[in-house]
Image (cartoon, rainbow, N blue to C red):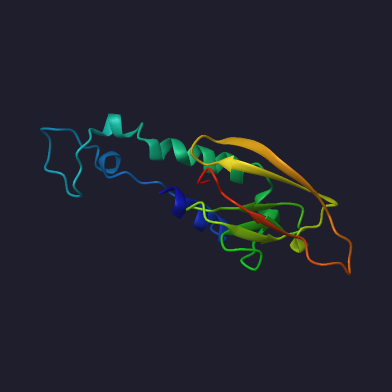
Length: 148
C-alpha cells in the first residue's frame, strides 16, 4: 500500500486513494456475506495502519508546492523534484543501495534527510556542498538502513 502510493505520486499522479474492502462495504459480522473477503468490522478497519500511512505521504507531498514538481526518473527511479531543482523526494521501498545524481539539483548546499513513511518523522542526515560546473558530477551513494 505504501509503495504504491509513493510510486504513483512520485511518477506524477495528482493523488492517491487508499481503499479498504471492509470500509467500502460497511461490513459487520452477522450482516451480508462479504463480497471481497472482508473479515474486520468496518469501524475497526477505519483505524488499520494503512489509513494512517496515507496521512504521512500526504504531509510529505504537501510540504512543497505541488504545481512546481515534476517526475524525474533520470535522477533515480521513483523521484519527484521541483521544476526549479530546489529539492527532490526519493523513495526506496526495499532499503537497497542507490545513487542520486545531484547534478540535477540547483542549491549550493544539498541538505539530505531521511523521511520515515511509517512514522512521518524526518531526520537530517547530511549537508553536501554543491560542485561547480566542469567538475565531476555530484553523486552520493546512500544506504537505506531503515527501509524508508
